[in-house]
Image (cartoon, rainbow, N blue to C red; front, side):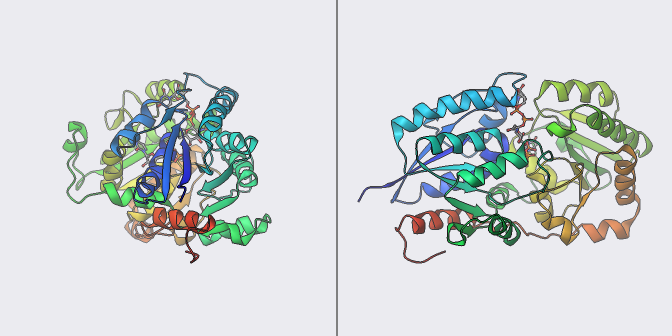
Length: 378
Ligand code: UD1
Ligand code: UDP
């Protein structure tokens, strides 16, 4: 029998982290021929993950350039993937989440009349400009996809409300939990000496990340200024900020926070040390999407510097607070968790609305079912 030819397309760090367990899982199935196409919308931050999970890409479009715009990525990825699809003719293309690679990968497949499976489908903030452009990327990808892998019941319901046929939606959990569980270890030792030398017991370690497009400019300036003031006012705090490789973010972070002794601006970390750092932190301050899913699983309070989220589950469960991007709100949110033990304990609960570590397996089984290679719906 002909094998099911599945082409997985991804290009940024978070997509790689969340697609890696799925690619590895597909390798276990004889019925599947798995092909990986990297767009390399990110370069170093993508390669770190690809190496960690020992993924051997079949194609690498190498599109990244410094200062790239959304249109730059769109044009290069669309043209690059077209060629690969014409050559490989997969039965299905899998894309993940909400980046430009996701949407354009799905569009390129549609133009070739190749089916699209959307992993991490159905998340919605309700505002097309926040997260920007991710909310629209995700909605457009829904329209291009034939199969939708929804992490949660809420994501499933969002798709149903938009008229997606229930028979094409599978609730799988989020593969980020598969990835997280594979790298977080008790008593983890960092290679980075700065991280090893931090006194996680007696200091209050805040792990911070910040990169969203809608926060560029004034909101990001306010975020960095509030963190600097918090660090000045709370000597027991150590802020660790692995700074995204976007040059604009790096120069702003350096100019505002660079000389504060208890703020450590470091290079992006490999996924394994980063996940273990989250696990040792006192609290997390971020505008990231994926970290909103990881921190709750580790029982870490997380303050989200955004005005909206497409991931309401952990906020509803009390582990995540959406604190916005205003200076006063950020300082108030952090100070409360630094000084009020009761408030801290209330948020420091390990909850896991995003999966049990078996999302990749469910996704593969759903794929096989969809193509008639399994009789039972997973
Ligand atoms: C992209 C995604 C965003 C995702 C984020 C994860 C879009 C429009 N944006 O945003 O959804 O949350 O990735 O991090 O799809 N750079 C490097 N090396 C790298 C990665 C980035 O130097 O490995 C620099 C480059 O100068 C690049 C810039 O960062 O031009 C921005 O990268 P880009 O992918 O355009 O935007 P992100 O903000 O990373
Ligand atoms: N991450 C990492 N190293 C870092 C910072 C983040 O491996 O230095 C991981 C993090 O654990 C999460 C993912 O990268 O899984 C989040 O990526 P990012 O914040 O770039 O994108 P988003 O999730 O906002 O789309």
